[in-house]
Amino acid sequence: MRPTIVAWILAPLSAVALLVAVHVARSADARPTSPVVWDEEQFAFVRRMVADTYVDELSETQSRDAFYAAVDGYVRSLPDDYNDFIPPEEYRKWVDDTAGHYAGVGVKIDVLPNEGLKIAGLYPGGPAATAGLRIGEVITHVAGKPLAEVDLSKPENIRVLKGAVGSTVVVTVKTPSAKDAPGNIVPALRQVPIVRGDIRPTTVFARRIGADKKVGYLRISEFVETTPADFNRALDAMVADGVTSLVVDLRSNGGGVLPATVRIADRFIRSGDIVRMTGRARNTRRTETARPEDTIPDNVGLVVLVDGHTASASEVFAGCIQDHRRGVVLGTRTYGKFLVQNITEVPGRDAAVKLTSARYVTPNGRSYARDPKHPEVPAGLPPDVVVELSADDKKKLGQAFDNQEEAVWSAPLPFPDVPADWLDPQLARALELIGQNLLLQDIRDDRPGAKTPRNG
View 1 (cartoon, rainbow, N blue to C red):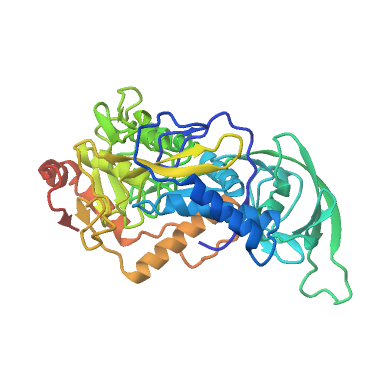
View 2 (spheres, rainbow, N blue to C red; view 1 turned 30 degrees about the vertical axis):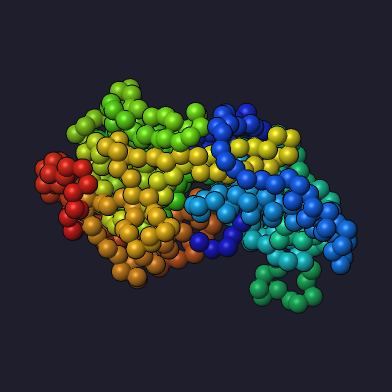
């Protein structure tokens, strides 16, 4: 991915679901007894030593950063790699990210140090586009404050574009001079009032593929709160239009919020378990089950594409489809993150703690979690059909995904040489399986449990 920042602004939320997690709460649901060692006196002694004898007196910011680092170090020392303390600025961004919709002006920006924010993309029909801003222009002032005078590497200084839906922000915009303009021409400046709105960039990229366009392709880039609605709109339109099979692409999907994954898996499974979780706290022991309502017809074939970057919530979906023999999982082994994190907000501090709270297994009880003590042991969900990609194809696939995501913002494609209808070898193999009607015959019916996957 290119190092481009999306300017997102969050409307107030009453509740936020979690990153392959159970929920977000302000206080823990249960506090089981545990032999946790925490020496308050020793911690207080170290703090006093720093305050009284460290060579320089710490500023408030330095002192706060030291405290955050201490708490973060405590949780990061736990046996797995997925725990950390989330300070306020990062927590607000996490809430923005998992919500999947943002109260803002609808721009994608590149930071220009000592100048402002260059518009790299505009959300179609969004507030900035409606107000007349154009890609390539530079926002130099927000609410009269010059951006050249602030450190734009700090997230809080970019958040000045954010605010409540319906509120107005006035920006000063500089239109760069034409390349052939005389050197003495001063770039034009204009002030533009923008009414902030609700921005919902999609996480689902849909198109029709195959010789007769009877195969629906649905790529999910991540699972956020708005993903099920986007997915269902595309899925329902395709089924109503007579698609015979579907390809759900979860490659490079690192996960997201668990409820979104469950809702999407439920569209394919009529009954039975979707995922089972177990942990020490009461609220982490649960099973998500399918409901018969809104299940798509069983005669619509399904291939799920996975790779080594398919993780967490994506593995929940792939494992569910595989265990119910609803479709074929194709690609390479997934990442192997069969753990659930719960994010708990620190009361009154606008910060949070992310802790691994449970393990999950597929409906048949399988788990392929990475073992940090034995990295040589294979991890990750094994696909039914193994198809490897060359280094060149992996690079090209990443570029194709980048093109899809830039197109959402009406931005110039970063890799115009990669055609929109390009079929990588894994997707091409999926179409072969569909064309040969192997989904239900040769593959699905002869795979009991975790049998060795066949090669493509």
